Length: 331
Ligand code: GLU
Image (cartoon, rainbow, N blue to C red; front, side, top):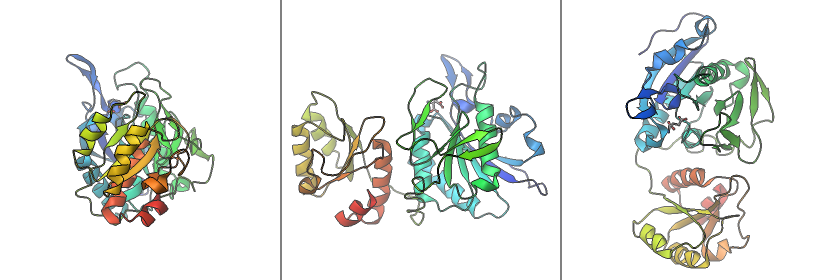
């Protein structure tokens, strides 16, 4: 659905992807993501039409657990086209919260933007008492049309807090304040429609648009291996047998795993498999050479990236150049 721009008001395109923000009651479950028609999302934001013109497009109707590479490719392609469209001032994406951080980071890597792309969602469905979706959507539109956010790139706003795509992560399955910024604190806060930046987005700028030249088609196979105490190496062998292009280890602590697991992965790395060590912890960094001799094993350390984001970075990296030098520079 679309309509034309109206005169001098800023023009925002809203791409709706489903999620709890567009969820309604459904037979057999408390609610189902993506049932609310996208234009109805806007109906709940009072008086929005007086300050901004919003064009609404339905992009997908899924819970974000079902967001896949196909949706990522088409969404990134649409964002690239809208970024190049001079009639558009900013882009808002509504999305389920479960994989919001992954979609934000993917867009951060594969688009080179000169206008804001603001993602948002909701923890409470549209029919809930004090649903948070309308306020989140209002904040996202405010941010996307704000001249001070022009260079912000891909950002996420939830509960009046603005996160950058690199640091954002979901930390609560249920709480209204469900997100955090992994190591550096939130990028900004929304204060009644204004933006108060906490820091200049240099950390947020890392890898920004680094893969904007990639075609949006087939992506390498990069699974995440989740490490736990008493881990059985059979699972590692089973994963290696699927012939992945790379593996991200969601390690304990600073990216650690039982010695027997490392032995399997060391042998696989010697055969050319790319292995990236990250941490299953909610915050912190995985630096090369701490407890694990990455150089000797041929592993790479994920730094401050979560496993799910290290996976996306590795997927992009593998499309271009998988030499150890370029991977070391990237991670
Ligand atoms: N699993 C759903 C999703 O991510 C609901 C969670 C949400 O949107 O908050 O779309």
